[in-house]
Image 1 (cartoon, rainbow, N blue to C red):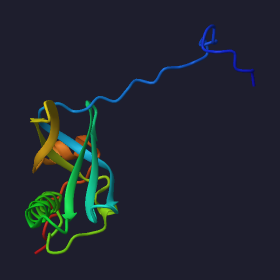
Image 2: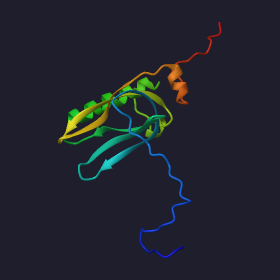
Image 3: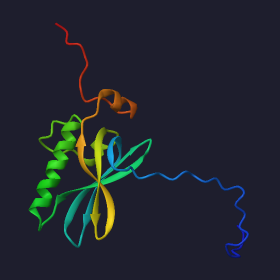
Image 4: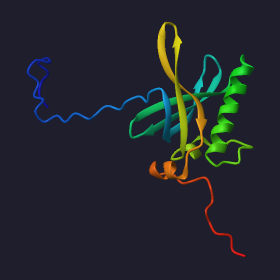
Length: 151
């Protein structure tokens, strides 16, 4: 280990630079869930499902509010988003699974831009069904059953 002598003249010749990951832009994207978990805000006493999606063009994160003690509307919207997403992923949708169930599942997301405090932000505003080909391209399994029914 060399002694620190400041930034000037650091030897960078053996350093490999990894390409950064892009944030998915506005529009429709076929994506796969790469991470999902519950985030708790101890101060606000809220619980949010954080879902990270990815495809070959980039990533996007979505936060779905599942518990908010002072906003019934936020919870209602969150439950609607969760159920829609689960059903589109092939889940029966009457009770939610563990967040880990989502990991590896493919789905379509529509991303929109909105203004907030003078800044433009992008966010997932709805989910949509993918074709079996789109799901397979992402490495997921189709939600439909193609098995022949024996008679």
